[in-house]
Length: 147
Image 1 (cartoon, rainbow, N blue to C red):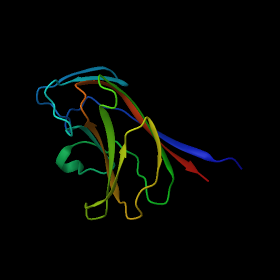
Image 2: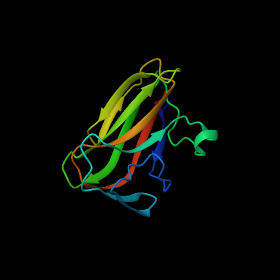
Image 3: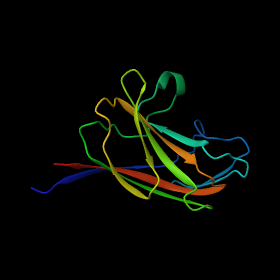
């Protein structure tokens, strides 16, 4: 029996909550093409966040990340271009049932394999500036191999 793969593609929707807007120019050209420019953004700034769990009553938004856990083996691929080589990276922040940090992963390559900490209850993805001033974000994909 062949292994099955579940795959989720995550986009940057036009809802700008959880987006760094101070001094920012942002254009949504298409679902998979968001242009972001900010000449004054300091390195380490979180540009955009996505969540696997949200408080709908508080934010009126739905989760944008798939549910993953500490039992699975995952692959992530990031499709983003920036004006500075290695000027953008993605951080996965894993949270336990109390919302405390259970671990994190810095995705600083186009593709990586990963597993979550065992006590992961939810997680968020953070697009972080590492010196870039402009970028084109297309998507990132999380895949799980099912055995």
